[in-house]
Image (tube, rainbow, N blue to C red; front, side, top):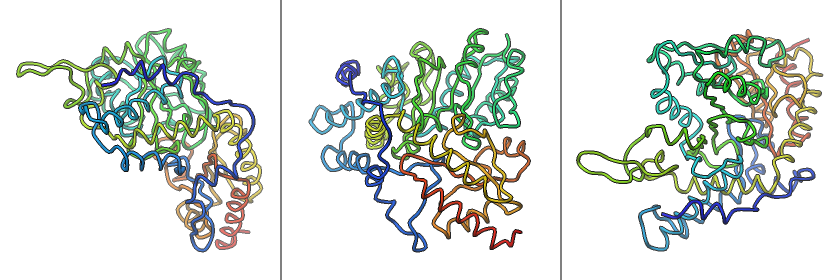
Length: 429
């Protein structure tokens, strides 16, 4: 097994120059799927909140693994295995630098954000949450950051409490001192809402939580692909996110945690590669991060995630954010002009990610999304795995347009034109 510290040293100085704007026309050339036609039209892919598209450099990195050094990692002493091990471990280093972790040993590869959050709930949660403890979350959470804590609270006799939202879809912090108190053992929240786009004040909540000795979990599934996330600046204890929303492959996710906390946690899964020594009587565990990566991992996907990080680093995350602010500002202005439209979430692009959730009159979002699809516009319709939030918004569902690095104002215009066509089809006055 390679020394991950040595790999970290090799990667020093790899951050790109982060000045200027995105060259979207050039970026689009890296995504040949955008040339595909649906119903004779080029697709305006506006479902990036669910999953991004994949650039050729990432796909090629995975193909190179399969074509040139397809082997298992860590155990082999032959060249292919050593190459696979080096690339897979280097991917941990790239991710660590991407989120400014202190060490790649704090970066654990999982299958997705959901598995990362479940790992925390099962390993840290069952070792630390007791009857009478309180877990604080928010009403805007994705089910993946809600259900594990419901199960844990029910099992341990703990209590769940929630931040509500304001009329603009922001967190209502007016009761922060009452919600986060001496009984609070865990605070878990999304960094960016996948429905409203709201960017939450994580740093402020972390300070309050740490003041009462609570641990903080951040769901970064929506934020990490779109804004520069610095775990040391946020101050949180855990961060979870997925590769498939950030130009990486499916089947790979990340759990970052502070080293001291991870070292104190029992393993989540057991078996090959997470052990140090095994006898018939007992076993001891491997070093971080391998302690939490049992069995043969998703090697090609891990390498692909590393390539996706390279791709985003080369673009510059400040440029990614600036592009999405401009595009979201334009989208909000254009969509607001459509009669009978209802938009949910913060009104200013600077206060949210590249997400616009809306309804058009009383047209069901599924019907609306079908019409949009006929016009070559791909959006998401439904409750977005946020049923409690949708209920609070007093609607059965919403239609969601979500943007990324390859989207353009012309695609926003395509969306708006399709909304006007929906009005004609449903004979709205």
